[in-house]
Length: 288
Image (cartoon, rainbow, N blue to C red):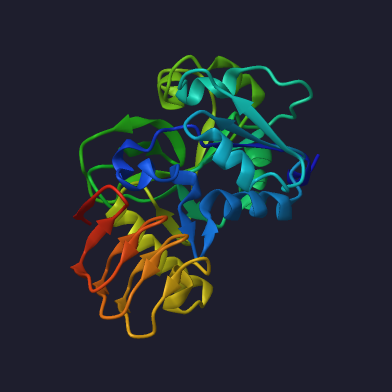
């Protein structure tokens, strides 16, 4: 078996509470990077890796996510009646191969599936967690000893690592999950899980401020112009002045509008507006 034969699961059902008011307009997996929805960027990576099937769980604004992935090859949607977090991974799915790649639907990265696979096979593991240097106390630290997972902790220490949002797990471990966070099912168990250091691009879209930063980090990474953050379905007058702004679909920006580091969401109409570090929706205008 090669990594090309495994199944994958993108977790995409959450309400995105920290991302409001943006997530009141679109579900977080549909926040665009370079005018492509995040979840489409992730799904296309999985297709390129040749995964067998990609499962996506749906709950909040699920029909919108389904629409954007309708033409992705070998996609399977899993409807949820209520949010279950990681517990959805324990639900049996016919013909699911072991192991399964699990991807959070609110971060962008280049998934090193080949490296994860080699680590998984080398140690006959129950899981491989991608980790990176911990950048904020808002992320829990992954406790490790000689590369083996030992738990998570909230305190901040030098050299801490944090989970990147991508893991490769055995079917045996997935079937054991009984908690909203799979870490609680790992803690104190006998499952063999290794940490794999990830040093590539990693973008968290969890809040409006993080999303704004992620957008321009992505444009630099992809070699795209700043205007790639503006939807082609929007109309922007030449006399408008936009600096490091994100413009979603069906927006109209008139002359003499000056925006700096501002996110403008679907369907907004602006004329003569001056704004700096704002999030503007049809219903709100709040600080970024």
